[in-house]
Image (cartoon, rainbow, N blue to C red; front, side, top):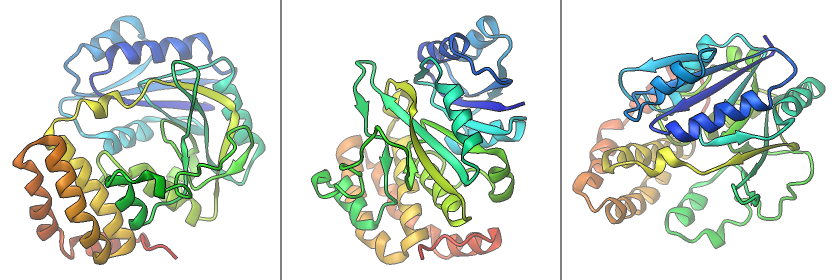
Amino acid sequence: MELSIIITSWNTRDLLRACLRSISTFPPKESYEIIVIDNASSDGSAEMILTEFPDVVLIRNATNFGYARGNNQGAERAQGKYLLLLGSDTEVREGSLQEMIRFMNEHYEAGAAGCKLITPKNKLQRSCKRFPTPWNAAALYCSLNWLNGRYLMKDFNYDIVRTVDQPDATCLIIRKEIVDSLGFFDERYTILYNDVELCWRIWHSGSKIYFTPSAVVMHHGSRSTKQADPHLRLEMYRNILLYYKMHFGRAAMCILLPILFFRLLLISKSVVAFGLFRWQRDIGSNIVMTSLSAGVNYRHE
């Protein structure tokens, strides 16, 4: 098996159908499989797959385990030489899957590669970033992204092949041997920053990550995330704080905690935002001990 396409979905039935149809229309020449992890969708997504796409491997979760664990379930089942993370809100273009396989076959030093993402109106989505710092996060969550030009790679030419820190995991191809060696997603990051953390580990293992413009995928947008209720948004913000505490220490958390609290309070209009302070008290040294037991160095060099 050359390619395992892994799609984790929650309540995106119509978009998922379009995604699966696009793969059927523009499949790679090599052998491939499609694995869909349905995270307890209530919109008939699983039934649609069983009826319309019987060849798809369906993992049907009784509860929503989140993006990280869902993809890990898919990776455990995958048989391909390469794993392709693909958003349920995407549609592949002609030759895109073939190009990603070709690129990885020709670049043995690449542990992973991202592709060019476009909107339904055929406009470029700026999908590559550098690894973030707490100051990048502070600017982002204070809606001051004009300060984040370097982090967002606003000078990046999306028509050339080059290495990048973290391409968007909406469409990201990864060598299975990398996953077998490093592990896949850290499930403590249930929704956000799991892809950033994985890219960080790939780079620090000695492998490279590339962007290739020859593969093009249309991306509708993060529909699952947009459906988030206050409690799900609280979990997203916990993921953000976890990443910066793990990589930059307690000082970063002290900077970002009040910013994220007020942002969540404004967006959710709910007292659920106070859960960030309860989580911050409880997490304490457990992060450090968990990291040490996992044998992973999460601190930037």
